[in-house]
Length: 510
Image 1 (cartoon, rainbow, N blue to C red):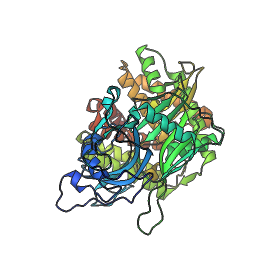
Image 2 (image 1 turned 180 degrees about the horizontal axis):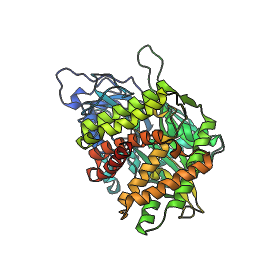
Image 3 (image 1 turned 90 degrees about the vertical axis):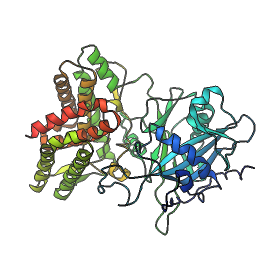
């Protein structure tokens, strides 16, 4: 006989996974967390399903256990009948540390402790899946409150994604979940949902070409910059970034006697820029037609500067002095050493690349300072949308996805940083486009495009990033090192793209 149904809106403290005499992962899952048997019955299914998802951050390492942070029934399910149920979960997945992991600089867990990431899951439950939902199958739990149900990825079910929109239209609380809507936003009902398929670290649902809901999959306490920054920019009148219309978050349970952690940002609803095209595809189209991209790049540089200026007005700024600059250079060096330990191809370049970071630190010791502010954090061509003229002259650039690099701790992503970090990310993106677009002289195409982007930025901001070569080179080197590690782990066929940049940057320093 199935156990008692899940109580609506229940949430529970995360439960530690036992470590003695490791049994199978499902057995190590703490059964005490949540309704009796819920996590124990789901663990074998999630152990197989979770690592296959594109947004799962711990690929290549086994899942050794789970802990339930919260469980909320958004729509009750029935043991019989055709009405699906919707269950919202926050679950910690425990894994061994990555090979070559180095502690420090905000890695997010204690030395000697297993790595633990918290994921947002939206699970549908039906007695049986109709054929269109078959690819979304997760499995059939044995025992627990979902015994006898078929559990699946809820975002594949239009009935359940429609329910999410209705929750955002009608603000309020449900257990640990809080739904918020901007007072000035009008969100129509009955907008047909469709799931976007191009997401990597998150999931998105488009509603009727009017709104897009971005759901964060790997979450942590604190306001996500992809909510915080667009909200702040909207209140300055900046129109380069779509303003949030609604969002939802979870209040985590208190742990011990300390203060309650900050809420987790779970999802943000924003206007969908229908008819827009992203800069990556526009650049590839220009390359395929042997066309020029400099006018578009100049306009994009202008848009980037406008957003940076608006963020500096809206949010606190700071000044990087010697201690902060030395710490910044040391963090870059630490990331280089960690990447070189994992990717031997970096080893011959380490001395020259470390030199770029040392040049930056030396300027700090000599009394040089730089302004720091909130930035985009992961700016590249795919994060820029052009609405209107495809050439970039008569159209309008907008910037999206202010989450920053999801692999970095949230506190680090929310820290003021030099704006040149965003600029370096876009410059690296031009290199990628030239290589992927198979230009016969990729470095020449990228060089022209990079120069146009910097010129457009200077026109709008009054500051040309090329006038600070040590700062720009250090950040571009840091980004290229990150790319080498990413490509080696996820797309080995692309490794030559950042390695070409590594060779160029090392030669520049020499």
